Length: 428
Image (cartoon, rainbow, N blue to C red):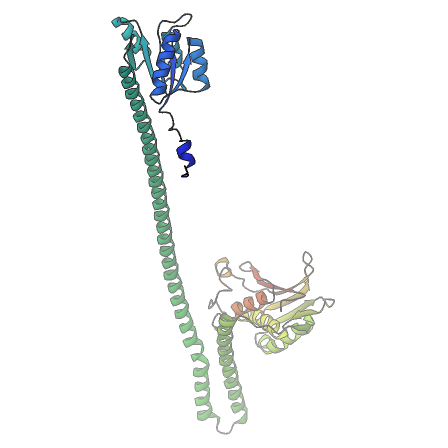
């Protein structure tokens, strides 16, 4: 015996074409329509009056309603009106089916929201045709609504994408504008820096040509004088040699300043810290500049706290700072100056030592004070021993390398006070 597949023995029924609710107070009509529609493949539910119809509809929404008009307690018109008042049920197609054949009844049915009107006694094919027509219309309406939703969503997505693109374009334009402005600012800064460098170079070249020429010129004049006039006068020759040595010493100091400044710019200040006594450092600095003090009749006063702790710092670099500050005071004031060097521990910051070099000279005007520590800045020099404007710049580099600060306080006509601080435990 041949094997028969389960599907052949128990064929799978096709799903119903639609869910139709029939509302009629006549059982025969309900039965007839139910059999007819069930045989045609529809799922059929029945309600014998308006109240049951409304309960059935609220429980499960049908795809279409066949609604009788003349029913006790609640007419088909009343049922239709309640359905059309609810957002949930107003779009269900309602076909009125009634024995009333008056035109006014039909008009009333359509005004209430019915989609069609079938007069009893009805023909089977007519009922099926009208049901099929309105179900197709309903299906097409749903498809159209779904397409409209998709279209609206697509439009909304495209609008959002367009807005996002516009926002992105605005950001890109803003970034371009910002980059352009930044480049313009950078170019302007470069032009300003170039102008400043050109100005500094001009000042530098002028200073170098002037300051390095003078010692050489002085040496040449002295040598010529020596060759022409000394003729065995040892005392005169010795005096001339001293002037030559002094001129060479100034020239060597200028060259050393240039070398030190270049090194500080390229590699920074290199420190060799060790344990030092600050009074000893100050005395060493004074010993080196004593000839300058004697030459210009400078009176020196010292107020050094002998109880200062031992510092960790570079002694040679601190000597240079003190020497520069003392030499600057002498060069920028008339002879007969009184200098006072003070060294003590700061009251408000006990971990630092505070050193001042105070003079009773002509003072410094506020405009010059703003630029004193700039590279190649040269103020008025009373004794005509012009420098390159490197001394105070190097002082600032050395002090800051130790972790300290440097500054000046001055009033025109009342002298000037240069000060700097050094941490007791300086940077290494």
